[in-house]
Image (tube, rainbow over all chains, first blue to last red; front, side, top):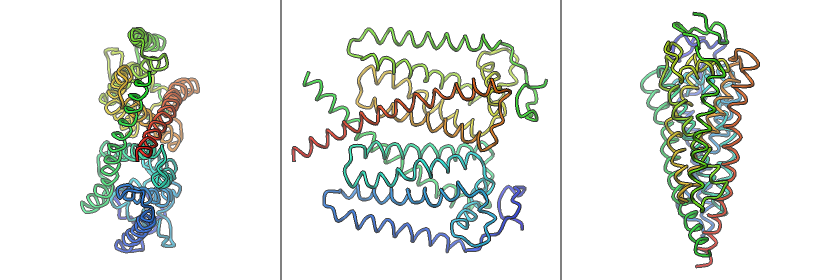
Length: 217
Length: 217
């Protein structure tokens, strides 16, 4: 069966075409995400001590954590997803996404390394961040900072390796901009904002603690 | 000219063999590093307020920062180093190191991406860390934490991509263990120790600040 990916000479023996429509795939992801976000927003609202910004952050960490664990975790450990015949949703997601970046179907090692690290090393800590924010833990900022930096590093590796290899992995400009550029840009923008906020909070906490120590002396 | 690297079918047209001896290459790197470390240790010792551990950390950041900027910076932006005929030291370093990992000579895109990010995004901040520790800046811990995490992420990508591609890039077991495993293991061990220390320092500073705020309320 011929595949729809670029470069055209990519070898994918046993490829089975995507069976769900694009709108079905996107709607399921969108609605599941909306469900998770609504649930976290609603539950976190029952505690008066959590600020609206922190509740928003909890929604983000729940959403991105489950995306890392479920979607990216499936990809990282399913080298033969493109042969799936059952219409299994997670395989369909990556068959569809590969139209924006065929390195997923082609099992590029940089992609697999980054996705594996994202799902295993960053996914569970995202869920821990939801808990840490809710409980006001002292490690909440440094944890959010660490995950955000990991997300940024991974996204950088993702874009830079594509650039170095000629940036020719999209089936069309639509898929290039919608899947490759737009979808990933959220994981540049949001982690940057969170990292900057955590950096400021942490610097000022450390600063004020060291000033306190100096006064005691 | 035939190259000494593995896999044997790696194409390197225009390859010029390494002209300096292994001991010369290692001695120059070793002595330069010793000079930098001694200088930082001596100069930082003139301030009584800097602890011995902080002085040791300043030595590390100066050493690793200059390694990132000079050695890795040269590699990242010199795609044709293996054709160098002049015996230029930095080209010789990478011709020699490629015996431990031929992906350097072969210009593997994951390697180039990681080394480029390391030299540009982590190198200068390492030198900033030397300054931040010396001056007791409030951002000192979060800066050291951020760089250490970047170094760890890069080293993980480095090892995982090699593993995924069959781990067959060394000219012999000696080069495999001495260059690929041993040399890189320092950038797993030391950043891990620093990251753990910074995590603890930051968590406790944030914790004590939030307790102070609660008391004021």
